[in-house]
Length: 238
Image (cartoon, rainbow, N blue to C red):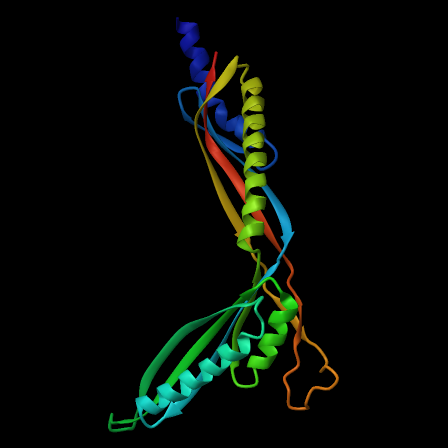
């Protein structure tokens, strides 16, 4: 009986040494009697297939009604232009209005801004639409990422791989501790994404375009890294 207790105590105290020696993304540490908690991770780099952009119109007027008319007219015209590009999803974005004051804190005018947001997997159409809109609107931001459909499909694949990696690590730990087997106490799957900064460069003007036209842009969307981690606890059986 005394020897059995000593053996189990040695198992608990020796866990930290084993964890230090482990290689790869898995990390384990003791969480309870004959239990180990660890994590495995799988990840894959994937090309971004979706572009998102936001443009805005900013204006000033002496009264709020005139300002609202200016902003609404500008956004309405932008929406009409956007309808020429059915492969691009367009929506109205943020809109805000605030007063301007003189030194005596008297309102002397109003300033406002209205945004329009774009989202699409059609880079060519989005690039040309942005160029068309930039004749009257100002670019606010431009980002690239992975579309939900493409991301969901990859995450499903990585979840399977992360689960298998977790099971393989559990088997390795079982052998390292000279255990007969193990049972899963709990396990969680978590997803993550790493999106790089966007890159884009201006293209030369197309032939036949007016000199005042805004040139479209050539997008370099880059890649994103999608990852799935499996973390949980197993209990060794003797």
